[in-house]
Length: 274
Image (cartoon, rainbow, N blue to C red; front, side, top):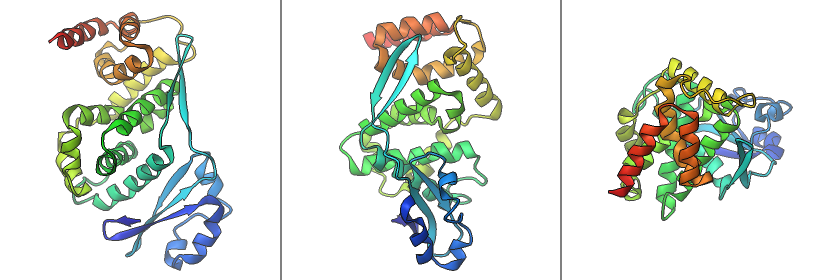
């Protein structure tokens, strides 16, 4: 699998020892031992191991674990689910995206990138790849909703919460716009300077707001809790809540939970009437 002017090696977890045997010794020395690979995967369906080599960009390890076919979340005692289509392909492309972005660090992308930036940038590659190979961006919206639902389920998934960047991209760019970039490097060079970046304080405060709103102990609504971050969170999660609950129920729930929601919901309703 080509990555810039290098190759990515895709290897099943069960064949990892054979993959190691086929690799140059200078690559093997940078990788976990075969007895350690399961612990490195840690239950994930795939992972990427970047290496420093003139021909090989990295190794993508694919777990024997079956990819998810749906994701489920519970909000106020109600359970909602989202079917996940082509999940193996999307997972693989996300991992490829890591390597594509690493190849661009210090050139198109700044150096260094934070761990969080690496994650959402991998999903930017995913969207670009979808646009090159599919007739629409439905799978990109699926990824957006999945990231939101993962965050609702566990605030520690904030590390992979690419929904703010996906929402901006899918709102600002049409399918044909993204499809029109023949090379990923051109695409990311165009959009990266336009993206609003989160700082550590904003990430921590949104994470706390998510925990207070969706966490297991969140039984009493506190509408003014971290109100200065509510607009940012509402704008990103509301499309997913509408998709899961329906518009009326989602808007009602948002207004109950957040002091800043009524103005945003009314603004959206007014926009929809135009």
